[in-house]
Picture 1: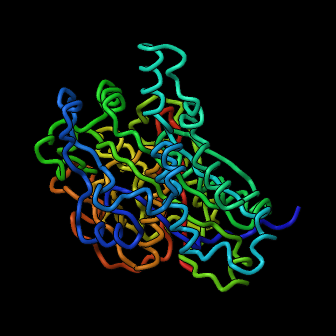
Picture 2 (picture 1 turned 180 degrees about the vertical axis):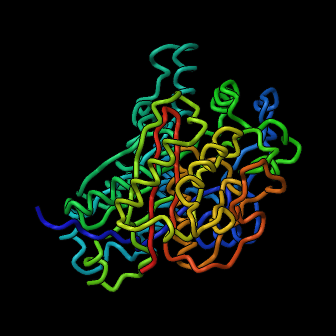
Picture 3 (picture 1 turned 90 degrees about the vertical axis):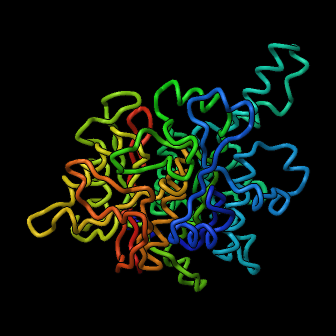
Length: 422
């Protein structure tokens, strides 16, 4: 078997609660801005949680990215993915104008979603129940399926390489990027358009998560304060929407075309909690094993990791478990907890569910690219044992050569991605 290929990141694109576009989103993030707003529509007012991370309405126009016929025929999560993918492809300058046709068989797509077209499911179920078969849309199933983001991107650009979709709850984005990287490592593709998308800010979704006691409910009158990763007063996550896509490329392929490189994907870890359908083990064992695998996969040691972008969603149990896992792995005889740089960008964005991992991968890459640690917003008080550097409220300058990002999901599924500066 031939040697494994190296994988680098050459393009970034996103639509998220902080804005449309990578530069806008990053600048708002590091300056401490929040994308979480109140849900003021009447249909939300009877719910326990009335806050969400919404894509800014004044920045999002699907016709800026997609033709009107496609807008009419696609779910919102697909539209977000098409916009993020176009940004990322433009950023990577791929496909190039010369010789692009011959590369289509070697360019693939791996864009996942946790829930997919929830609104299509809801609307068609109501229509069928009230008016029968003929009121079900012919596009119901295509608008429902999670793989339609990958499908539409592949069709739009003519990418004929691997066409893959991941759906692993809130770990989806990280798994999509990790799996796509492995396809390049194995020589099955030269370029992969990888990421995830989610658009389920809907009364039914909020009702479901609220019934599972997962959502923040104490800050409905102060939405910007509602997502509080690692903070003593945290009481649940804030549902959010958006998409993030990266262009992964085989290293030599990127060098040959003189592509800009944001960083190298050097490690990918996965694990299962085997504990509970929604709760991690209190000691964070699954997170610990996922991070350990990523580090071993990269062939480095824990003390070489300069920054950890935590999954930390602002839930009491989840944040504590991840914090325990981070300290177990990274505290050593020559490294104190206070030396470990950890932050959760969900304080600014809320939790994008399946799209969280890919957005946080972008933020992790930009931390490497800019040598800046993004802040954890709303962090003002700590429980015992929370003694790392959580970059509370204000971004910090730091040399970041290697950074890790975590994603964990219902069903006990975990993923960790490890990136390195070139």
